[in-house]
Image (cartoon, rainbow, N blue to C red; front, side, top):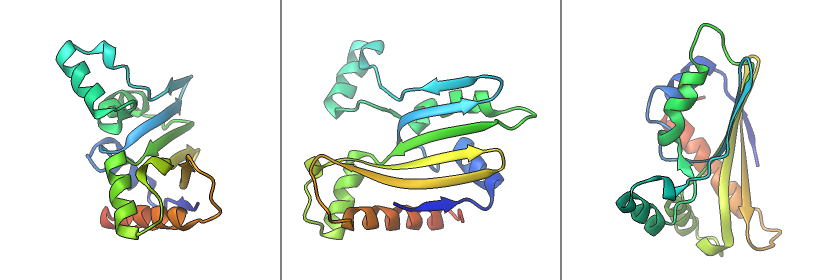
Length: 163
C-alpha cells in the first residue's frame, strides 16, 4: 500500500472528470461533499436495463459500475464556482486487468484468490491523495501482489502524465 500526493490537482481533475483516463476502472463507492453529501454505492443493478443489456451484464459477471457510467453524474455535482469540500472515489481494477497483472508478474496467485485491487482518490480542501490497497480471498503474508499493483498504478499515472 502506498499513498501518492497529487501535486497538480487541477490537471488531475481534468483527466478524471473531462477525459477518458479513468473510464475503464470500476467504482466501489463514491462520495462528494458540497452543500450536502452525495453517495453512490457502485453496485450495478442489471435488472434496471432492458432484457438484452441485462443478459449482457450478467454474462460479463459485472457487479459494479464503471467510472465512465457514473462520471457524468459526479461531474454534475462537482462542477460550479466552488470546489467541493471533499470527495472520495474508490476505484477497482477490472478483473481482466487483474488477470494480466498476475500473468505478467509471475505471482503464485490465481485470479480467484484476488477479491480486488483498489485505489482511493481522496480530496480534502486543497490536497488530493491516491492510496492503493488490495483484498484477497486467501491469507498470505506475501506482499508481492501489493508491490506489483503499486508499480502498475505508478506506471499508469506516469503514462497519463500525472505526477
